[in-house]
Image (cartoon, rainbow, N blue to C red; front, side, top):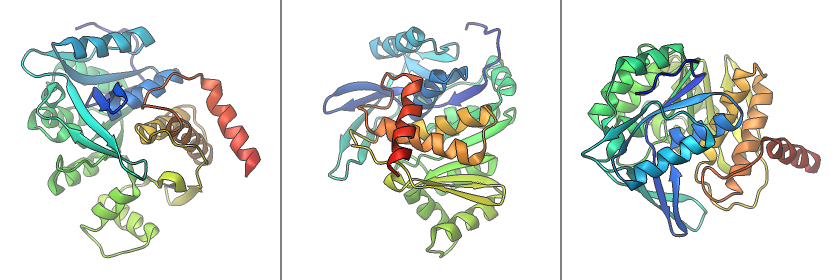
Amino acid sequence: MLQHTNPHTVICFGEVLWDILPSGSVPGGAPMNVAYHLHKFQKNPALITRIGDDEKGKELTHIFSSIGVSTDFFQLDNEHETGKVFANMNDQHEVVYDIVQPVAWDFISWNESLQKAVSEAEYFIFGSLAARNNISRNTLFQLLESANKKVLDINLRHPHFNQKIIEELISKADFLKLNLAELEFISGLYSNFTHLKDRAEALMDKFHLAKMVVTLGAGGAILFWEGKEYKHNGYTVNVKDTIGSGDAFLAGLISKWIDNSSPESALQFASGLGAFIAGKTGACPDYEVGEIDNFISMNEMKN
């Protein structure tokens, strides 16, 4: 394994895979998508994952290397194939996933260099999907012991989770990101509230969370931040697909937090980046940083 000299500001943990769409195959996986966008904004991310010793794994490594994202923590698996997901769109432009298992990223193994990298990073981003297998799950929980600011993008995908795993993951988080359906499902395990704010506050109280964001699709997002509430109504865009738009949103938030932006500014930028990506095909389209500011400015002028 290569030794990096500069600590990474953000470490993302979990799945890297190929989204197999009706139009073809594109790289994917929430941690990979977040790392891609953070790299665009020069936040020096790294991804801890595992790929198969196959052509699809080599292609993913090449893609990351070619855009300058660290592959220092890509583990090679001689027994399991590189991850893949069969993704199809429904009539509401929502993505329906068939996530193959077991695959290489189910078997991410712990080592001291991973622990060191995580302990040096400002942010550690993780999700629930990589906790579906006990090998990667055990590695994740070991790394969480050394992590600083722990960001959980819950990312529930049936049948790849259970209540016990959800509770264990949230209890480790400093910040939780989830969508409205996930909020309704998880809060419904503990309360009978029907209003979004009541659901959110009940969940935050139960897990002693001071910071959480709920994404609302075309309706924007609500950020709960240390006793205050911030709402953004989102931006209008001609949706190509929603693959990775939530990941882009999270990357936008983290990027602005690293820059010490206000909660309002961070939420606005994240909303803009998420909408911009929804207007593109795939989770990691090529774009210039200035395009996001222009997109936000033009949409603000319309409102």
